Length: 179
Ligand SMILES: [Zn+2]
Image (cartoon, rainbow, N blue to C red):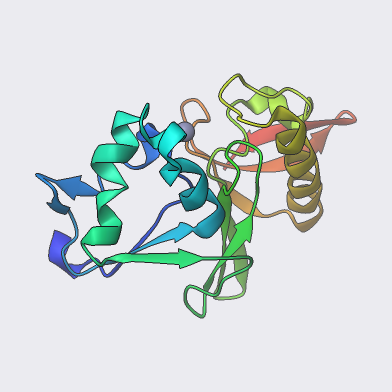
């Protein structure tokens, strides 16, 4: 697939390790794409006191607005018939996950709701990167209970070795099972 065939980029939030591919030499890396960002995350990162100390956001996110490729979204937003955003705040104020409903199956793109398999059991473990660790654990608890109940396939970018898995019970403990 060529870059100009991509028509949609959904950003789960605006940390540097999740936005680095937005722009090349100040131009959209995907010239025919709309870039979707949650309004709550945009408002947080674009505030001058935050933006001024975040070179990654200055270089890879802030220009999207002036390039007229940015769409700000709120709540549970239907991106397509198969793709819906889900607010999952805590890691950042406007962090979102994505629900994929397709061909009778459901999957989730988790973003950074969790970083370690240990958080399957210890949902109250919040890494230092979580901007609001109190909210992040409430989010993690709720969404992990849902994933376990639904048996959903999850994509979690920071899980070691293999980023696709499910949350299942084993000997009374909830574990991250690689899919
Ligand atoms: Zn991350």
